[in-house]
Image (cartoon, rainbow, N blue to C red; front, top):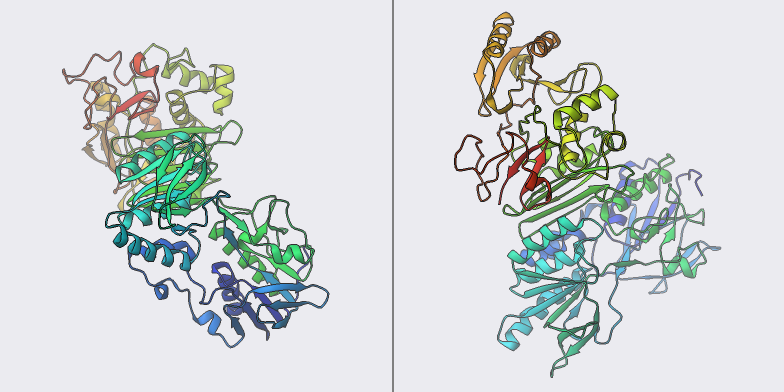
Amino acid sequence: MSEVLRTPQEIVVVGAGMVAHRFVESLISRAERPMHVTVIGDEARRPYDRAALTGFFSGMTPEDLELDRSVFDDFRVRFLADDRALRIDRSARTVTTRSRVRIPYDTLVLATGSYAATVEVDGADLPGCFGYRTLEDVQGLKDFVERRAAMLGRPLRGAVIGGGILGLEAAGALRGMQVETTVVERSDRLMSAQLDSSAEKMLQHLLEARGIWVRTGSRTTRLDPDDTGAVAALEFHDGSIEPADVVVFAIGARPRDELARNAGMRVAPRGGVIIDERCATSDPSILAIGEVAEFEGRSVGLVAPGYAMAEVAATRLLGGDAAFPGYDDASTLNLSGVDVASFGDAMARTPHALDLVYADPTAGVYRKLVLSDDAQTLLGGILVGDATAYGALRPLVGASLGTGPAAYLLPGGAVDVPVDETASHALCAHFDLSHRQLSDAVRVAGLTTFSGILERIGRGVGCDVCKPAIAGMLSALVGVQARDREDGTVQAADGHAMAGAQKESTYSVVPSIAGGEVTPEGLIAIGQIARDFTLETTITGGRRIDMVGARLEQLPTIRQRLIDAGFDSGRVYGTSSRTMQTFAGASWGRSDVLDPADPSLAPVSERGQVPQATRDEPRADGVLIVGGALEARR
């Protein structure tokens, strides 16, 4: 199924959606030989942006949603709208349409997409029940809501069956039309394919704050009509009832593979035309792309993989060689100002994956990064409430973060969290050693992975205290020779970021001063280094000394002199980053910086260390623990 095809003369594309449009665009923009492309679409309109359907409720018109018209207006393209393909004759290489037109092909491309699934219960076809798949669906939904609200003389109550991305978009559309909306999800959480339970709880909290109610673990068994025959309520498996004047089904999609199935092609038992990495089907003359295609046991209803398949198919037809790399499950959602993003191994299914979590319920923010066992490689992540880091993080999946994970987890970017490494009490329930003792043990034993550290020194599976602490250790201990990096920082031989790029190709060096405390000898050493290398010195907002103006070749010597004086170079900051100092404390209800010298704070066992009561509940709301220090927000 994987031979490279020669450029054919007659290409027929069944389907006129976003993926078909991308395929034709890619093909004709690169073709150097004569060809004819026939596109068969069963909707009576040109291709439009199905992913932006929700925009229709905020004023976008069908014309606004339409994709580039010039693609199908090309003289090499014939577009047959509102004329569904009914039959494939593989032996004669023809496609017969609803209008009884028989179209010959050299190569056939199936881009039929999928159809919206519905709940198989009584009443699913009542007036007021809608899918959320096509432009006709959303137009009908909007018209019905306006008519029904005028008829009843009150705001409507709506229900969306399905708590995935599409269901939440539909809920946002209903809420935007002033419909009191409840999302009904059969599983135990929303967006179960993208979010873990903690992220889902944060999302649910944010949605309900915006008037979108959530009902999980609920299976709909019946839809009941009112006296007019329109839908009026949903019944559930537990006997409860939810009033609803309008219902939207968004429980997923099913591949439209009936053409291939009826033609005797290989189709997956659960649906989808089986393809290889070159989008070839069991018939050498037929390719399949987009949601109708089943690759390595999966058929995914996302646009991005469909676009990738379209490019692969077009490249093959032009005589080149290309392969579909597999599904990228990254997904985003913006709903009423609530941002959600999930990418890579978000559920930490990779063996020995290390997950680091920051949660602030007051601010409505949840961030999770999944790293490799050695804390060097980003595997995936989840962002809820604030997904601004998604654009930077997604391309790094499978690569190094280039900085400590706190730069992406904490508010304001890079954050300096001081740790009293001389404290003697245990780091957490999984390690009997203090932070400093554990760091020394890891260094001496040459351990480079979180699982290896647990097996050798600790016990259990780790928690939100030791995971980020050890991630910081590994980030500092595991590295290569000092090198100039693309992000403007310089990496020392032990992997510790030691300097940040400044203007005129010079660097800023920031010695680590825990809690802002330094001995007179330390101050003298810093002053001598600054004088010897002609560096400017400033006191930062984090109570540290910033030495500015070092040249690249001077950095190894400066770092060694700092180490000899008892320092270790700390985090570095670009000119756009903000330094924030945080301390451990028992004062909840404070959102500003906690000062250990503030007498209003409850006693702290050791500066920079978490009180044992807090350690026993590492997932308390608003708590982030990094390297043994605690930032408390509630």
